[in-house]
Image (cartoon, rainbow, N blue to C red; front, side):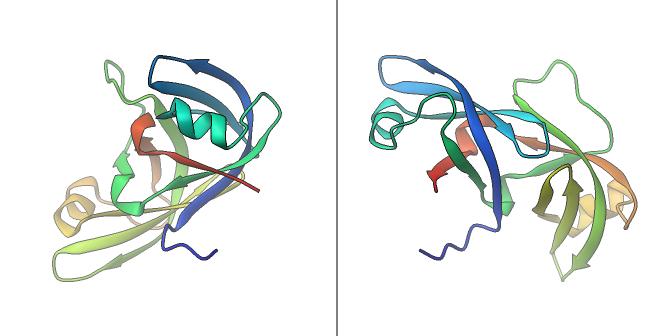
Length: 139
């Protein structure tokens, strides 16, 4: 299956916390970072997720926000440090590629945000991703 989702990072499930409808799934990415995905309990069961299951974390580029330093006092669970490798700007929007341990992320943000944050190749950033915006796929 081919997907338009640019961000597909491999990892391994390290734990699942089931709820009545939703489950939080902890994933250790191949680069060593830990992330949390919030998915439906039904999906977790249908995928057969358990500790040790190989997965791909899928995130649309429009759901990856950027900061120039770690952010405290924020409900966003996933903060992945990285370095900007490329910035492509258009009239209103920009595509920012970020090297993170074990892979690469793409963030679609406004051209104004790129300017305000002074993002260029080599800029250290933190990719912010809400757990509800991470989908999981099994191999």
